[in-house]
Length: 402
Length: 176
Image (cartoon, rainbow over all chains, first blue to last red; front, side, top):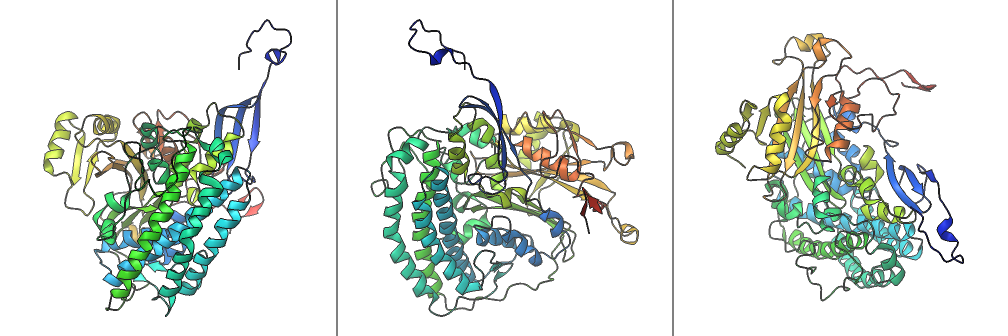
């Protein structure tokens, strides 16, 4: 900063000169959401440049995919976005089905919506809780994990795993839901809905939280698109896009007949804004607060979708159908499919030469693109705002590094 | 999806750029000449009716069969295929661009093939091109900061090449 010249001799701080300094943050840092290393060029408290270093979790999952059959790769998709593994399973399963021109049964379709939306709630709860941690408040994290635990219990009952499910798979799902599961899921939703009010009190409308997030890290609409941002990061900047509505037919067909409104601010208003807390005055579209709020809206949207899916699933009389064989041959060709995962649009690209083992698999990571905009957002912010901005992007390093 | 009419407009706007297409595929694609890539991308983003303002993914596919027995049976010649997946937030349409590169520049193993960078068109290409350089070994000319992104900077080789050999040792860590 250039020192301001002032004649008043009592004001001494204007004479203090600061030097540029490189500050290393991470890779082991509580607020970098995994192993992310940031090198900050600072001048006093002001950050002038941020250089992210990624790759600490790189396993070259794409290379592994060239040595396994398409269905065998499902567990590796689990380990990309491990906080929303169901959505990752689904994305890859749909990509393979797109190339095979395979359509799953009606029951499997509703089961997928049900499971994917439930996982979206769990993922956003982690995003919300961890965001509180980033900003120095511990309680929301405990509140969020208390409810997430119940979702994980439901998943455990359905497939035996709590984090890496491999449940939704090519051709449907590995197993049907156990008896009584739907009732337990409904009981969870009934109990969960009032809890969201607590989250709004703890964070969304909390004066300190608003001070830390409103007007911080403003991402313009144009920049969001230019950097390939997606999901809540894109919608937080006011871009009306949600692949569940705007995506390809094979994916939007899954949500056919479901009623939901995309969580985005249009003409200065969020959908159903009379029910939810008002946008604070200091908040600017595209800032950390809006990105956080979009996630909170999506939690409620997903509760609604899960309820719809339960009704539809319960009404299905036909069987779930068997998933495809483990070593099923895939027709030659190449397809790309993006799905709306909790953290953004995750895409899979599959090239097949006609055998059971893909010639090339490619995972397009949503967090990878979302994180690449970080250096723009952090230019000129305070050091203390860096965790606030990184947290608002809600990245998961497993998906970035693959 | 855009029909043949779209292809005609593209050909008129960038003469000589389109060298192949497959509109009947599940994901229809257009193949462009590598040297015309940036021109085509700029046109697609700025001038085309659909305005492909978002670059979703860049993929390099290595068409090479290391097994000599199997290589005798394949119908293609060894090459690198670059695939660009574009998306328009305006018209909500996608587009697939492909372009072909030699596996090595001038057939000299280790000499990376050149391809003009599209960072000037979409800024997200910065990290995506670094990833392709890192894992598949493509030299993006005009890229502001082309260095490895996922692998360590002193890593050798390009893991997603089909003839990649896993190192047996890296800084004292056993590879196998």
